[in-house]
Structures are given as C-alpha cells and as structure tokens.
Length: 121
Image (cartoon, rainbow, N blue to C red; front, side, top):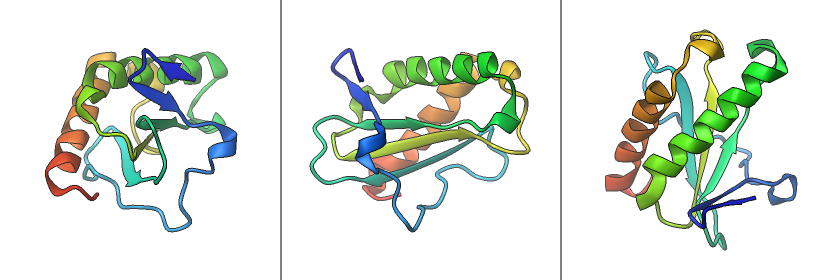
C-alpha cells in the first residue's frame, strides 16, 4: 500500500525482516522499539508496523498502526528509498491507548535523526 507517494507499507511477500535483527535506534527508556535496515531494490522507504495480541484488543492495535502511519507521513519525508523502518510497541511500555500521536512523532523523529547522519543503524 503506497501512502501519498512517500512510503510503502511492507507486504507479506516482501520478506523484509532480516534473519539477524538490527539493534534498536532508541535506548531502553524509549516508548517504542524502532529499528531500521537497508533493503536493496526498494523504490520507496518501507514501513513495517507490528503489534501483538498481548498489547490489547484489535481496536487499539489498529488505532496504533494508523497513528504510526500518520506520524511517518509527517516525519519520514527526508528518508531515502532503501530503508525499512520497523516500529512496534515495547512489551513493558505504556498501553497503546496512552500513546498519543505526538509521542509517536517525537520517538520517530529522534530515531530517524540518529539514523540519518551515520547512514547505518
């Protein structure tokens, strides 16, 4: 699914998750687990959002995914094409309904800032 020509969500056929997971971009005091890696042959940046059933009912999980997509639309405009950004809530983090879109944008902005200068996560 392409969102406004800026990024695409990962499809099941992409197999975008590497076998050796990259390190999280944020520290242990973060609200979200955000990881990123390069994917060859990608035309747009890819966004992967996962939430487990343990994080709440489907309504909360879907609302969280929508908020992450909207935050990525507003924050991730400067990201170049070959990156895959994986966002998921922390197991010991706050409940999904307590995460506002401002919290998600702040965490995502900080993570992408750490990603941009080095070129590698």
